[in-house]
Length: 201
Image (tube, rainbow, N blue to C red; front, side, top):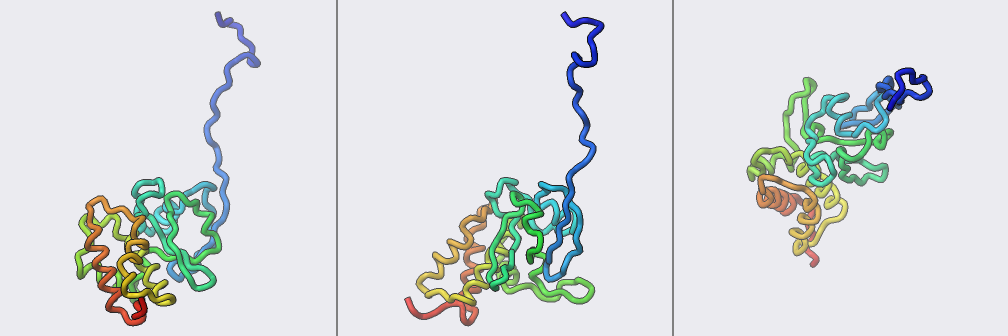
């Protein structure tokens, strides 16, 4: 039985409220614009940084486990190559000092920020109506963009176009099962863009 005269040393410890969060600055270049250093909580995921700090909501939070790839951004490397990076499982501070592109940065805009010309892959997706709900579309756009940029450096044999597209888009999940039109749009663009396909087998 617990004594009514229990001393402070014997009392059960009380949970303390969270009074502060460890903050650390991050600076990076987004869609060609250098962002001033801003302090954000350690452990903050990049998807939250994009949404809450930069107001860029085009990258979608889907599964939250890095499986569906709706959240990917493009990371531009110093050697001129690029790659996709999942933002729902990658901390914002990983991107410190890096150059990234989100789906908002792919179309051409005027001085007022209005879209005046879609990127080639965005235009092809519209022509092929490659989406239903559209939630996964930003991820597919970024994946296809990375692929097209790679093919400009390293053209693929025509016989390998389909397997190359499959490998590039394979990790992206479309819950509406709209895969066929995504693949058709990318194939159309690859085959009709000069320099992406070589004749050799």
